Structure formats: structure tokens, C-alpha cells
Image (cartoon, rainbow, N blue to C red; front, side, top):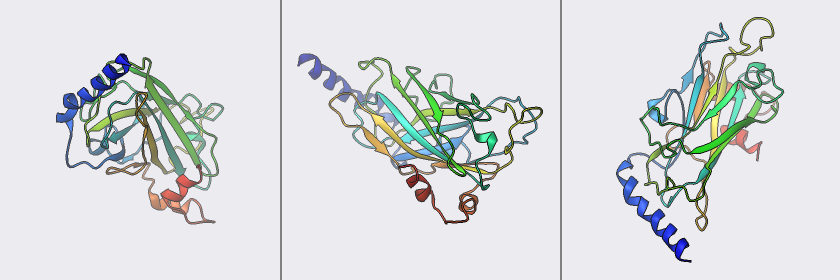
Amino acid sequence: MAVATWRRESLLAGIAVVFLLADPVRAAGLNLSWLDCGASGVANRTFACNTNASGLHVMFGTFVAPAGLVGVSGFSAVLDAQSAGATFPAWWNLRTGGCRAASLSAFFDFTGGPFNCHDYWQGGVVGGVAMDPPIGNRARIKTQAAFVLTNDPRIVAIAPNTEVYTFRLGVNNLKTVGLGSCAGCPTGVCIVLNSIVLTQPPGFPSKTLSAPSSRNTIQWQGGSEADCLLATPAKNATWGGIKSLYR
């Protein structure tokens, strides 16, 4: 009982440590951007689809903290991608057994920057990413990470309105051109950060965030929400409708 009391007091004490990081102009919720977090990143990513090299296309998922986070020990996130075409592009089939298997990677270490949002994890979590089989012109991506030790000293309170680096997902250019290449790189794709579930230490409830703070959708090759609506001619859809298909 004494240990549990000490841990609770330690978690609550962390509120003062991070309180100055709060930004009162940010609403609690989710943000998704290319190149960096939130407003520091961009909404659209274009690529000439002319090489198998040239590094990664990196999307940043973040959350703006709600009230009541006494400590976050890990997270799980769900993203949905939808093509502007009638089918899901082979170039975006990044799952095991897909045309570009192993071309999707996840990173949770922000100690080397960028530094425009709060690095809560401090390089201390491990995790991974996976893609579900496409359904029509849509596919779901799941990523999660957690501290290895439940009593890790980096598990502290997060002040409300603090925007926190949560994950980076990188998409490489392998099999874009040449023999064995995968079609569909130029096709517009919309990606929505559907939800992030934040796990807290024992005795404190998890927090689920599903509303955007400022922007929880990004585009590939100019893909837009209008493109996504056109991609399903039999039934008009909204992002809410797209997300409901997976629940």
C-alpha cells in the first residue's frame, strides 16, 4: 500500500514539471501532418514516382493532451487510408504479403528532433506498426508503443493542451519503378488519424481521443476528401462513414 501511495504521489507531482509546456490555444485532440507535428508540418505530400531511393515520406501523429493525464505508459493508434481510385493502390499495399511489404516503418524516438512539439517518450518506448488487408479502396493501419517498465520514471503527468509527439510512420520508395514495381504511386490517397488510446498506470483510466485538434487528415499526391468521396461511387461517404466501416 505504501508503494502504491508513493507512485500515485509521484505521478501527480509530475504535473508541475510539465505544466509550463501547455499551450492554451490548442484544443485537446489529434493532429496528423507530413514532415513534422501539427501546424509545423504540411497537409499534402507529392512525389514524382521516379525512383526507388530518396529516403522516407514521414507522417507525424500527435495528440494535444486533455485534462487528467497523470501519466501515459503507452498508446495505440488507428489510421485509415482511402484511395481516390476505385481500388486500393498496390503501391500503398504495405502489409505483410502486399506488393510493398516492409516499406512501412514506425519510429517513436524523437530525441534527435524535430523539436516543435513535446517529446514525452524520451526514447523510452518500443512498438511497431501493421496494415490490415485492404477493403475495396481502403486500408487500416495500426501502430502502438509502450514503456517496457510499468514504473519507468518517464511516466509523468502531461499538462492539458500540450501537443505530444506520438509516432512517426515512414513510407519508403522501394518498387516504385523498374522490374517488379508496384502500380499506383501517382494515385491520390487520403489518410485519417482515426483514434489514439492513451494507457495510464494501474488505477487510472485510459483516455481515447478521436476528434481532431486542428487537422487529423493528410493527403498523398493531392488526394483530398472530395477524391475520397468520388472513390466510392455506389455510396457517398464522409470520413466518419469511412471510419465506421472498421468498427
